Length: 388
Ligand SMILES: Cc1cc2nc3c(=O)[nH]c(=O)nc-3n(C[C@H](O)[C@H](O)[C@H](O)COP(=O)(O)OP(=O)(O)OC[C@H]3O[C@@H](n4cnc5c(N)ncnc54)[C@H](O)[C@@H]3O)c2cc1C
Image 1 (tube, rainbow, N blue to C red):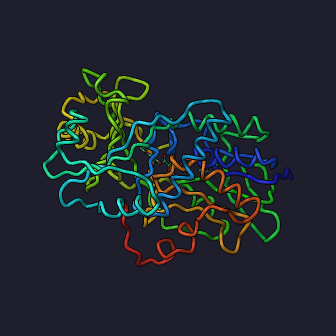
Image 2 (image 1 turned 90 degrees about the horizontal axis):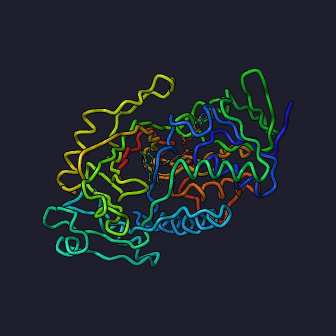
Image 3 (image 1 turned 90 degrees about the vertical axis):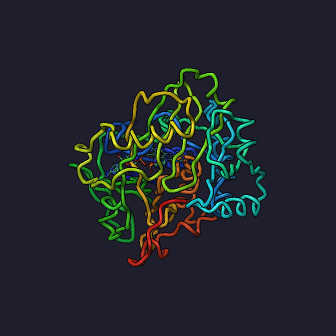
């Protein structure tokens, strides 16, 4: 049987980062990906993601400080510029579904500067917005765009350069752990590893079934739409920040990034889907979701133009929307990283922490909130809340 120090299951952003960090620490790493590398059936494809400090708890704000440092390290290792700072504007309408005080207190607690802007001041700085009176904007100057598919591919390249072996089109069928080395079953082959890191997102439960772990996850099929403003210059990154509409429904959007379009999407706006047959999952745009997004854009950013294309992408959600970043209790050789649909910004951080767990069993980062034995993952009566 082939044997490795660490097998990483799933090579989206999180698994690719784990493989890269582990290989850079000199481990003999095998990364396994069910589909071709760079595929579009998971969560890590397309052009862009938001990186921001603004979060609803001090623990998350502190983790974002680590994220900025880990992105900077990735830029140093690769020699590529990845972080485009645009500023980020969280827009709270009167009586918002998402509490602004959670954000202001958390940022203040950690010492991250921000400004609170009224409609007149937002209009003075960014006349592109048309806002209901009474809206308050929380502006944080370090809000940034990071590339999605490009970063995932880059981390795979760095993993291979550091000695990792990455195999696409190779599905892990089962794991078994009898207390020694972990056995990994593939079609027609078995291999063993000292440690296994599972970053299989929507398919996490399938991979963990062999060690009797089942998390209460739900996967939704989301949609992001690109709009073509007739004057893209006024939507350029230095003229428009990233924005998030902090209500229910919640929407978010980007300035132009690499093309003369602006991207926008609803957070948790798609239907829950069955992921057992990923090849039958539609990639077609949903016309109702498109109209919901387009009508919101006509109100918020009237000059943003017509929709020109939409892409689909999966959210895999925990009941509390919190991350999973932990070793499996009773099977400490296996650790799990799951992003709860807001972890691209943390991808370099996940890789570092998962490498810590696989090499020493602990991490200097505070990951206590992301345990597998927390109530949201173990108490069937836990009330699901996805908007944060
Ligand atoms: C539309 C959209 C917008 C988002 N916006 C943001 C944002 O602005 N900021 C932010 O921080 N985050 C954002 N996110 C969330 C972020 O993109 C995800 O949290 C992150 O990409 C998840 O990465 P992953 O590697 O865990 O998942 P995936 O990319 O889905 O990777 C999991 C991989 O595991 C593989 N796999 C599964 N089972 C097996 C198996 N048995 N054997 C081998 N391989 C297997 C899958 O094929 C897949 O490639 C967004 C997500 C979406 C969909």
